[in-house]
Length: 198
Image (cartoon, rainbow, N blue to C red; front, side):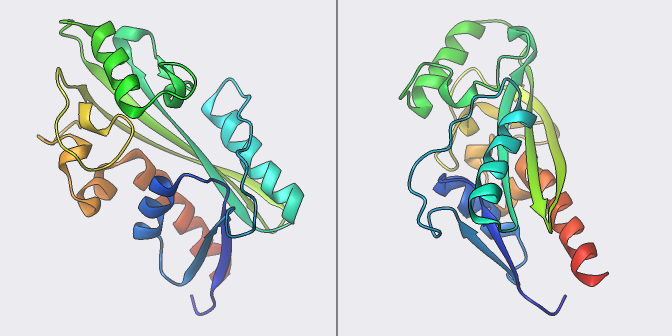
C-alpha cells in the first residue's frame, strides 16, 4: 500500500476513535465526522446492531459523498436473553453513565452463576460506492464486581474467554488483540488493503 486512504469514521465517540486509530494502519488517514464539521449525533433508530451501523454510515455517505464506515457494538448476556444488545449504550435509560449501565447488569444478574456473554461489533463500510459489512465477536463472562480502570462502557465487568483480566484491566494493545472491535476492524483493514492493492 503506497497511497494514503482518507476514510471517515461516522461517530463522535472519542473512545472508539482512539481504539481504532491505535490499530488501523497509520497510512490510512482516519478522520471523524467531527473533522467534517458535523457536531450532532446521528439518530440510531434501528432494532439491530447491523441496522444501526448502516444507518450511521449511510448518513455520512449521503451527506458528504466520502468513503466512510461506522460501527455499532452490543453486549449480549445469555441469562438476560441477549440483553442489553442493541440497547447497550442506553440500557439504564437516556443520559445514563457507564456505571449506571454496569450497575443495572450486575443487579439483574445478582448471584446467577451463568455469567456467559458475548461482545459483538458490526462495522458498515461505504467504499467507492459499494456497501460492505464486517463482524467481530468475543465470548467471555460477566464478573461479579467491576475490575480495572481502563477502557469504557462495560469493560470493567467483562472478561474474555482465555484471559484472566477484564477489558478494563488490559492495556490498549492487549484489548485490541482480544476485542470484538479489534477483530471487526482487522477484517475492515484486510478488505481495504486488498482494494487499494488490486
